[in-house]
Length: 173
Image 1: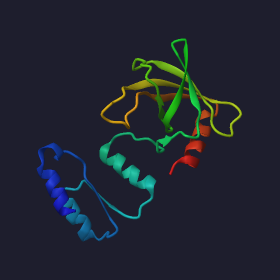
Image 2: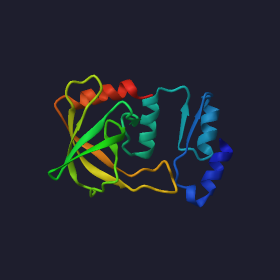
Image 3: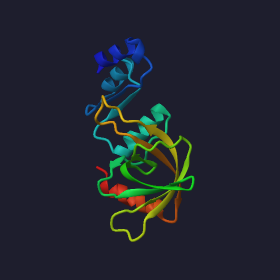
Image 4: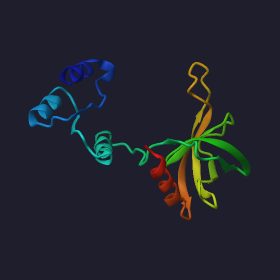
C-alpha cells in the first residue's frame, strides 16, 4: 500500500485523487503507515457496506446513490410523458434516484417528465416525476455504450418511493 500511495501522490495527474486503503489487519501501525504514505482514509475489513459508503461519502463530500443501480431485466418499458409527448422506452438500469432509458431519441437536458413504471407483481404502475440530466449518444468504438437518456427522479407520487425501494432491495446484489 505504501508504494502505491507514494506512486499516486508523486504523479501530477493523480496527485489530488482520494486514496482509500482497506485491510484485514487493523493495527495502529498499519493505519499510520497507510496515512503517512498518503492515504486519505484507512478502513478495516470486513466492514458493513453502508458504513463503508458513508466513509467514502465523507471523504469525497459528494452525494451518492443510496442503492446500487441495477439492470432492469425484470421491468418492462417506462411510459414517459414530456412536453405533452408520450414515449415508451426500455429501461436500461434503475436506482432509487434515477434511471437510464435506452433510446436514440434526444430530449434536451432539463426537460421535466412524468413516468409510469410497472414493477413485477404490482397491479398498478408507480408514478414518478423527473428531469432529463444526461443525453448519451451511441459510441461505435465502445459496444457497451448505447444511446439513452439519464433521468433523475424528483417527485414520487403516492407510495411509489416505497415500492421502488422494496424492488431495488430485493433485486440488488
